[in-house]
Image (cartoon, rainbow, N blue to C red; front, side):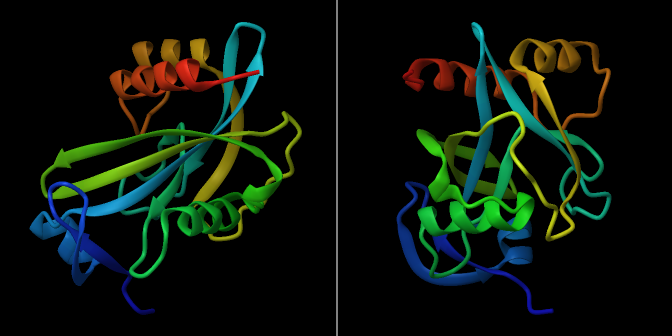
Amino acid sequence: MQEELFDACDEQGNPKGERVTRADAHTKGIWHHTVHLYLVRKVGDDFAFLMHLRAKTKDLNPDKWDTRFGGHVLAGMSIADTARRELKEEVGLNLEYYKIVEGVVTKRDNFPNREFTHTFFVEVPEDVPVQFEDGEVQRVEWMTAKEIIASMQTKSRPWAGSLQGFQETLKVLQERWKG
């Protein structure tokens, strides 16, 4: 299996015209782009998120619950194409069938992992049919934002993300959600 290649970028997110391996990007601190997709639905005055348990074989945060789907922008791919690919690969959904709310781009300097993360909120119904096609997801479960926050505070589940990060994401969703 050939190693993934990323387009390297500078500290402002601009392409440098270089391609780097995933390993080099994550060990040498090379800036690159990622996409995070939050699958959500409105539940009264709260939002429910489709959570997933990451595969035990993942290199980052294995066997932990995650609030988002997504992945790295591969060399030569656009942000939009990456969002479509990741949603299709991870849960078998076609992005074009759902309402999408664009989030923010976050610069994440967790040296040596340095990323510009593009976020999107995808409105899906509670009974959305999901399939785990690429082996990155063990199972999914709906949780409201209040339930997620409580779980992160009590550490009742192992989480891939932080409480602060989730609260910041929720704030963006609340500000940008219409309807």
